[in-house]
Length: 430
Ligand SMILES: NC(=O)c1ccc[n+]([C@@H]2O[C@H](COP(=O)([O-])OP(=O)(O)OC[C@H]3O[C@@H](n4cnc5c(N)ncnc54)[C@H](OP(=O)(O)O)[C@@H]3O)[C@@H](O)[C@H]2O)c1
Image (cartoon, rainbow, N blue to C red; front, side, top):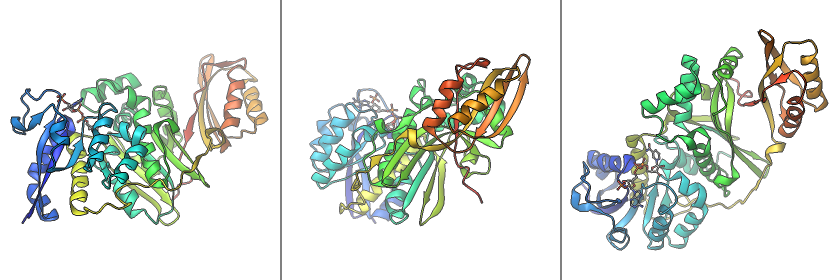
């Protein structure tokens, strides 16, 4: 039986907010048994409270933030507005008042997270954000608690469901990028404006959050180099398939000694790698560490109800562990430097359109050789007067590979702009 009432202030009643309300209602009995408390939503902040909204009673909606901020009975606020403004001001004010905050807002955390964590600590309260990365997958809790002694070295993630759906569709049907994206939008897997998904920025925000938690060092959105899937063609997907790879938009965060490198880019992943099997709108996070070998967590990466479930798990943590400890507020105690992208050693795939003439391949091979880039395999696909060279390289420092490409693009007989794609996960063998 619940012996305590916990009042919540909800900021936002959109896709996630309305599902938090519903799920809290549906699961009231289990939550009350688990926590010994009855948790109820006392006020909901929206822009227009006069608009009828299914689920919650009309009289708890407000457009006045002070109704939540100044209500001393409200001890937990749940921010589900999204974006940086005004969410940043709201969350800052709530923390300054000593209220605990739960948020699903990756934009806010990847831009202002370090400051908000500090504010939470100064005010002896906390900010929880399980729902900000990978929807229903409990990755933040796992990183902060279960992996505390794992000595993590890298995190590779498929953390954007829209792009994973688009790439899966392109591979499954052979369709063009634009058609696969239109299908994702029809089925509700992509926003009307999917720019931040497609260009990798959404995934970059999530990787910044994951890297800062895993490596205990501040990583912001601007520290993450990022490339999207706009230039991936169905031809690349087909060639990669022939070579035994699947193309994914990957976030990769790695430790290089005392430095960290975080980026988001499309990558060829070997078909027998666990990440290659993650299809459709699913997300997955693949962790490697000295003490754990490899662990993969996967599941739905978005959706109102799935995200609401992660929000509720944070609310339950706060209620059941009222003492604030470093586990609740991430401590960036390491302040690591960043490992330069140019010095990262990567394996590349490259498709080059060339004139089908004698000497072209020899000239290309010479430039690669001059730059210390060694070709692992090359397949030539004829297309009339033109040919496609599909090449895989041995691991190489990225700056050397780029220097070779800068020369190759100007060679007589090379057509179009070479668009290399990294190969990740080749070292995985089971
Ligand atoms: N949707 C997902 O599947 C998903 C998954 C993971 C994380 N998230 C994150 O969850 C958060 C919420 O996303 P969502 O999809 O639920 O958003 P949404 O459907 O657009 O809902 C936003 C809500 O916030 C309210 N709001 C916006 N600006 C406001 C302001 N200035 N003052 C007061 N209320 C304001 C809106 O009020 P009105 O109703 O009056 O317009 C609406 O109720 C975001 O941070 C998002 O990144 C979403």
